[in-house]
Image 1 (cartoon, rainbow, N blue to C red):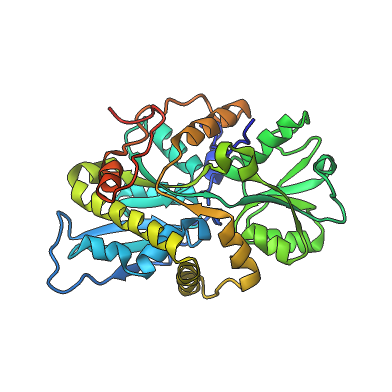
Image 2 (cartoon, one colour):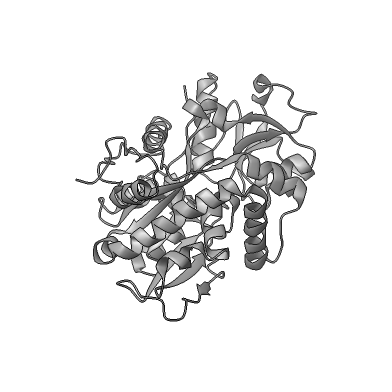
Length: 369
């Protein structure tokens, strides 16, 4: 049985407020950084599309490397021609969804939990998932002196990024599969689930206040650099070892009014993923350069190298895994059963993929009519 990936409860305001986005590798946090605004200069004399500019949003994290690299290397701007790209970064899914709803961004890279939450809260009216970006990059890292096997996790203190976030529900689902009991809201039970911001999880680990963490990259590799051991890679719990960690979403209004711009961004994303997969070291360096510009600090080699290897960059949104994640969240009691019909519109992505000689992707029956 595949591991869960969380989604937020529509019934608990506190959980909704807490829900992040993926990805530190999803960079989960409670505040929008929104300090990484970056505007790319359009080529002189290049033809504009139907909009003067397109505003995109993403996290300054490795699971959003498609956006990081695509902007850094000018691959998106090349496809947009005279239409300017304006980028903003966020550290939490809810703040990015709010920006999308307010028109502060038009297109965003975001994790499955906030995408589903944003879609269901609006009654299916505010966004569409239009493509995939990344899979994987989530691990259970533990103190090898305290935890030597999976069964040893019982009775220990394990961190997740936030109540109701993608990794939190994944861990709750895994706990349930072991036959252990934990109260989802309090985190108390056979395992103590300690909700901890990814930024301070390494310090919590070093101090001994947690015994391990179920976290995304690069937090997982930061813990390994501090002496932690990877006890479980979440990808091993999924069919073909793939599960969605980052989606591309768009405002339905922007999609309707500027399909040519959306298509150009998707073409840039597809070409960026192709470049990333063909130029591993250059892509990794480009992502790290972008991270340094946004955060002031690049990731050291002993963190970025293993973290990068655990993430798969792809165009397929892996829709069936999103549906499974929703089911797991419902089972955990963190989400009322949602109607996800219409959350995907992969028409433009399939058009781009066909043009590039690539296979079209499946929406798992959740496409817009």
